[in-house]
Length: 172
Ligand SMILES: [Cu+2]
Image 1: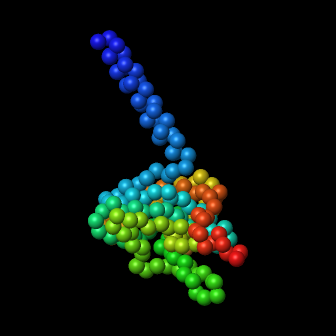
Image 2 (image 1 turned 45 degrees about the vertical axis):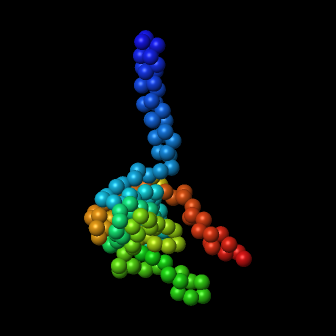
């Protein structure tokens, strides 16, 4: 009896520390995950894309655990004069041009959509103040089905573009 209760006490004492250590392992790299309806927004970060033009961009991943597609249709933030959903398109001769996407981005059912460097992104034009590393940018994303999701996106000026395969071989 006394042996069992001691063992139980030892387990109870150990578990919270193990759980805490597990959480701390991830906090360095992972932004907090924001959940809204069937959607999860993760790995969000922002950067200054042109200090001269006072422009910035934000990148993130939206996961959809639901049975129907959803659509990111709008974005807003009071940190810039204009905030838009942008995408890059090839306009010939290897020239990429970016511009506003009117319909927004589809987040497929049981799938995900990534906003990433050189691809779809949230564009900030006319920043009210220059972003510094570690600044937290308030952003509200509007989805057709899930509704509005508000999150704070951290400015990360150190982060490098993801290796997108083709861009790694542009020297060839
Ligand atoms: Cu853009």
